[in-house]
Length: 293
Ligand code: NAD
Image (cartoon, rainbow, N blue to C red):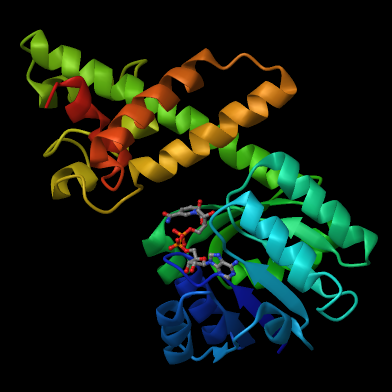
């Protein structure tokens, strides 16, 4: 089984690296945080103290890092030219499309096949190996990446050329952010109009207003299937992370001269919530902001 370097062992990367170990790979681990590295060692990874040492002799490199600036610095300074020639590079972080394309171009120019492979699914899916990967890159790189990603997820989908994985991710999350705000608005208005919220759900969920934010992730406690609303808006997908993805979508839209007024409105809502110190709670908590609570 192949040897893989894993860079960035935080909330998401820790579980993903552990699943590669369970899948039979030798995993070289690196993170700036000692606690994250120690946890990865407990899960069976081999800890290293620099990226350059971690990538020496590996067949592939997987990264799960906070942002594009860090991804670019790690790959351009410490991976490209230090991992063996031809090693497959897989960046699973959520970053901007332009940086994903720039890093892939730098890697390809030096003979490293590379894919951007951001994920849908949170910490529970990372731990459970049930992430969905949306992958950008050439066909042969996708084919090589697929069996590695399959060890960490339930679905691996080829989205197109370099950067296409990030493009799908931010378009999807912009749609999700806007639909969650709209769903919360509808419930808050229904409440003010004196409707019973379960009754509103029963009717709207089988009418034309039906959408995922309502029927799979209802923002109202006690209505619909179990969701973070039933747990005090803890766990789930944090508003600060939704804000990050909406900012990436706005940046991409500006670069592509695309009109995204609903996405921009959703960004403002999540900015207000995060600035008010509520960024750690689930993104469905926007309903309490709309209720003035
Ligand atoms: P995190 O902050 O928990 O983990 C990031 C890790 O990267 C940290 O352990 C940090 O020490 C490490 N790191 C930072 N700079 C580094 C460097 N130069 N070299 C090595 N390690 C470095 O974040 P996370 O929640 O695991 O998110 C990681 C990525 O996954 C982000 O791009 C995020 O947008 C994306 N994502 C997160 C979720 C989620 O629910 N948390 C869901 C989907 C996608």
